[in-house]
Image (cartoon, rainbow, N blue to C red; front, top):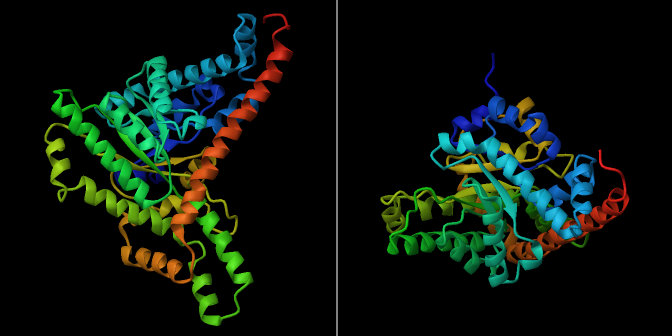
Length: 384
């Protein structure tokens, strides 16, 4: 029998997490099946995922009605439902966390996007969520904004597992990597343990191609010079993977033998802060649907995939080796060429951060509105 393709990723040292959570999957045993059969070893969530899960199904209707009858407001109801799902998923994944000695088996829960520019508010909310979930294998997601960096550092120093989200640029990635290292150093200075403290850096992939390719398309529409057109056309669909590969190269520098500061922490039991490839579903139907998985395989990384991408990779994904390490000079060349044609990747990734924060905030607002409608419809109905 051919080996499960998802298990082949595991054999390369890459963890596969599911970028989704639903109460139906938790109750049916679907998550446990993914763990047992496919080696899925974590779960990520965000406001858009919960908006689809809670607002788009009847799985939560009984719980919503019960909480509404208790006099809970809509925001409290949603908070309760989300925390319950994260707790349930963490319990299912607890054996993975124990088997890997605290290096895998995590479930993420996100600080609200409305706090993305509020350092102190983020710290307070991260600690509230950490305590409310009450599981050692939870990770609190904090956006890697300028304001988020000190919050990330403080929360890790205080012993919270942190998933840094909405990373699009190598500069921002490097900032949060140093925040992790500095937080561990602070704990060591205080005589606090660091061996079970985990963090991942969620580096977004497909959204980079989406915005860059749209910009290239606009430039092509206004450019007649053959040489410039050739350069632009050669860049289509290349920048997201190139950007991620160079981020991984920086990860190897920061967390490898060359960084004496981190090696001192390794001697105290420190884990690396693993890069997590996020937004890895293919948005362009003309391109291979599992490309962002196939091209970013490497040890000590995570790829979090929505269910459709998990299914697609299980069906026809190819594992050629440590592809995230391949052709780094080609990756650098793509980014140089992008700059040569006048497209500023830093500007585009800054826009992606703004757009990502807005998308998650809008998703939660939509979820609030949908839940409010459900509460009005359900709270007067007789209990079942």
